[in-house]
Amino acid sequence: METTELFRRLTVALAIGLLIGLERGWQAREDEEGERAAGFRTHALAALLGAVWGAISNQTGIGGAVALGLAFAVFSAAIMLFRYREIVHDATFGATTVVAAMLAFALGAFAVVGDVEAAAAAGVATAGLLALKAAAHGWLRRLSWEELRSGLTLAAMTVILLPLLPDRAVDPWQAVNPHEIWLMTVLIAVISFLGYVVMKAAGGARGVALTGIAGGLVSSTAATMTMARLSREQSGGASLFAAGALFANATMVFRVLAIVALIDAELLGALAPPLAAGGVVMLLCAAAFMRRATAVPAGAGFAPKNPLDLGAVLEFGALLTVISILSRLAMRMAGGAGALAVAAISGLVDVDPITLSVARLDRATLALDVAAASIGLAVAVNTLAKAALTWWIAGSGLGFRVAAASALALACGVAIALLAR
Image (cartoon, rainbow, N blue to C red):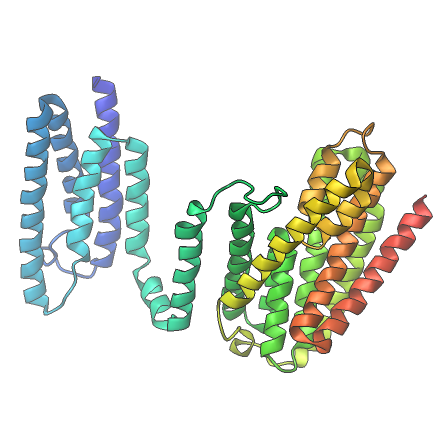
């Protein structure tokens, strides 16, 4: 290793130790000199010590690696001894200082013998975790068993099961891709869980609005299902959750326009007036429903009883599988002339796939007016399908409000489209 590169790595190691030591020293800033096992300077020196041993190990092969391991063991033993004396003196418990010092030494060594950028990132993460002690402990005290269980279930769905599913069609119609379907199912679960977190943190009306807007950016169907489930669990909140569903649907409309704008400006010119009109109507209806819901008590009462309704999530996954098969069969039967039929069927599940497909087609293959009509039809069908979904899940209280607002938005969009012809 060249001298310049070695100096750079030693500097990074020292910076890591200084960063960790800064947090540890700040935590113990009230202690008198000599009353703490490891503070600002000790952590900085520990990281530099690890870096020096790392440089030595680079020069001496396997023997150097063994020596580095022994140095780490001796250093850890010394830190544990001093920390033990501090614990006995203060009559307290805690191993954080020991682990932080060991990490400072190890990351200092890794900055020299390994990936210096990864070592620096790990040093920042270490200091951040140490600084979040009060916030993390407060969060843990407020965490319920249902929330922990739901988070672990969501992690298992994403990290364990999703990578195991084949990312290819497994049915004769080439319509069912287990990886894609489960990914959408996980997305539904994520939106539901994040909606719970947002509403619990932000409070009733504001939390519902934020959940609807954020959910609409990712999956308006997921956000609508979340609102419907919440309305079913809560009494007297139909207007509030109707507003949340309409915020999600309006966000979906403007998301479609953003996708088209990135691909085909000419198609955007044909789509923007009717879709924007419908989106604005939804926003106005959502604001009206939110205004009517201001008298409804907000707060924890509007957090869902279950952070992750796994049964509802699996139901959506099954529905998505059925619709995917039906869409594929319809495309085979209709051929290239069935763009509108395919758009209508695709809109039952999602509007993004058909939007991307139509926007990318050459205008010699699909005329501009047919392309605009296909995307508009998919948006209309998707909007009506979500209105029906809310009625089915939550009943007429929420369903009527969402359906009426959706119908008004669609009527305005169709009227603008006819006037523009």
